[in-house]
Every structure is written in structure tokens, then in C-alpha cells.
Length: 255
Image 1 (cartoon, rainbow, N blue to C red):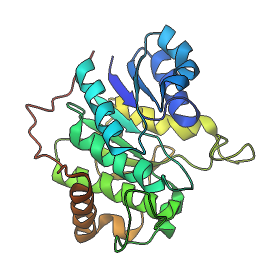
Image 2 (cartoon, rainbow, N blue to C red):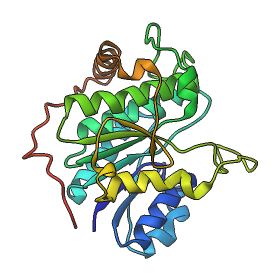
Image 3 (cartoon, rainbow, N blue to C red):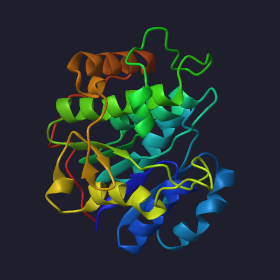
Image 4 (cartoon, one colour):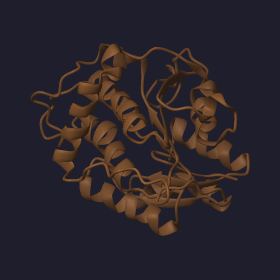
């Protein structure tokens, strides 16, 4: 069994991944935005999942989510699934929260970040970006370019951690809409596979994946200077630097 933490587990791809992983015998830590949302994961809790609660659009609540996970004990994998497609919380939820949780949660040897094919249309610049969300300074495409770059930056600076980004496709979730043409099952399969599989392909790092196929991300994602800019900007905004990687302190935990 592998212990897996999944953000945004109340619905959509996050809930689907949690459900499948529980069915496969893994231990799962689900996440919901507020206590009222616990009812949406009650069936998962009844089947052994554990929940943490916090609004990822708020930096302090995101810190508390990390603390809740750490109090439960180290997890082997984290799937940074939570996301919003529009509004003031695009950058806080899609970019700041994955960074801060990466920096603060102890233990994961596998990190999976939800990207989108729309990241190809993002702007590879953080000039004028307001990460607090008080001003709308970035699009959804921008946010997905930034988080995909974060995944590749983590893969580079933490070489003993498997860090990957996943394009789940345009799938029929609340975000994607009922008419989305892609396969919902394939939309969450790759995240589960990267988080838990012993397949040699799943045990690699620094990949951008679509339905278990490694595909090419936007060129900026592989640009080390842009990666450094993303890390430095997020570290400065949150006041939390990505810590040096120490394998003995971030060992994989198999439960």
C-alpha cells in the first residue's frame, strides 16, 4: 500500500482518483475546502480515507493543510489536483498552494501536478503578477504554465524525488463541463499511476504526461532561468523557500 494525499478531493478528478486508489488498497488523505464539504467525501471516509480541511486560496489555511497532513504522518505521494479555471483565486489555488504544500509537507517521494494543454498558451513571464489574487493579473493558461514549470523545477532541484506534471485532457467534470469529449477514466489514471505504480516509466521524473504518454510541454517549462524565476517569485511571496532536499528526511513511506 502507498499513502497518497490528494488536494481538491470533493469532486471531479480528485475524488475519482481518491476513490480508485482506495479501491486498489492504498491509504488516502483527501482534502476539502471547508467543513461543509466533508459530506461530499463521507463515503470515502467510511472506507478508510482521512480528511484534511482548508481553503487553498488562503496562504495561512494552506499552511495549516500542510500541518494537518504532517500530523497524520509522512505520505509517500502527493497529487496536486485542486484548481480553478477563472476568478481571483486562479493563481493562489493553481500555483501558490502547490508550491507551498510542496515546501511544507514532509515525506512525499512522488509529486504529481495537474497541468492542462492550455499551458501552451500561457505567458512565460511573472512581471506584474499578483499571486495574492487581489488583482486579476493572469489567465488560467498562465497558471498552468507556472505550475507545470514548478513540477519541472522540483524535478531538477530535488533529484531524488519523482516530480511530474499531467495533462488530464478535457474531461466531463464540473470544470470541464458535461460535453467535454475526453475519457474521464483516462483523465485520472495517469495521476494514480505516477503516484503508486512500480512500472519503470512511472518511476521517472521531470515528465509532462497525457494518458500515460510522455509528451512535450511548452518550451519555457524546460528553461532553467524561468524555473528559477518561478521558484524565487513563489518563495518571496510566501516567505517560504523550497528546502534543500535531504533524502533521509523525505524518505518514501509505504503503508
